[in-house]
Image (cartoon, rainbow, N blue to C red; front, top):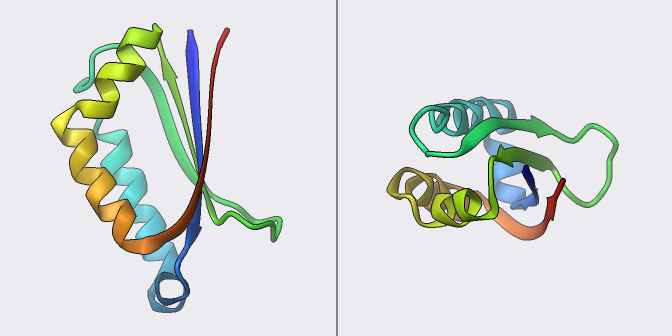
Length: 98
C-alpha cells in the first residue's frame, strides 16, 4: 500500500472568498475519483485547524506505486489539479509505502 499526502497553503484571496465552500468543492471532486482511478482505495481532504503553515491536507491510499503514478496523469485528477493551482500558493508532499 502507498500513502500520498499533500499539504496546500491557500492564497490570501482564496482564504477571503469562501474557504469552507472551496474545501467542500474540492472534497467532492477528490471523492469522485474513488472507483474512477484504478488502484485508488481511499481519499480524503480536510481543513487544517491548528494554525500551521498549510491550510488543506489531502490523504490518498493506493494499492501500488504504479497506481499512484497512474493517478498523477489521470485526466480526472489533472482537472482537479488545475482547480487547486488556482487557489494555492504553497505545497508539500510525502509519499511512502507500507
